[in-house]
Image (cartoon, rainbow, N blue to C red; front, top):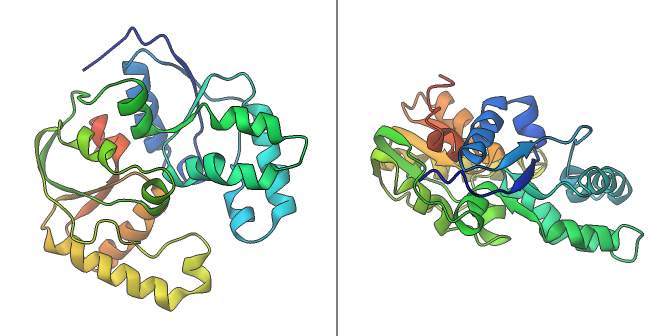
Length: 250
């Protein structure tokens, strides 16, 4: 469970959505890391990974934002993010964005020490039981970037399997997209809504009390759909569940 002998230093990359909409996710993630003996800090001036600009085809803007991120994270130890999406931007898209530029070498160095939260807990710190407890039925959604770019399929499930009192039930179509996709939901609203409807039907079939996700963007998409449909199922980021903070929001 708790391992206060890790001796590691980590810069916590809050991410835009967590910073602006769900600060409790950041608080939960930092608590989890500190409980494992990790010395956590948030570097001053850290803003965005540049993904929105990159995905929208605005490479110059993405380069400027992401380039600043690289500079801010120089010498900051491990970099941990509560988002497979932002982690994937750094690990898999920075090489393309910075190839042949003055930031190429520093981007490569940053990639080698950047981790998604559950990946860091399980694969780096070697922790699977965080002493969490939840009385009820929970189900887990695989966020696209974490699953397809980072191969994160077992880490979250392993951590949830050790949550005392919880009945973990499989989510049909758990690897199917929720329909958010950032700008995709805006540019292709009808397709996004159809994908969300399919996802909501699968969630409702589990009769879960709690839908657990690893990305705030997916959480926001599905939470909105569940709320509009009058569903009793609530959504929470996995950090909140593991830190026993599931009651932080309604």
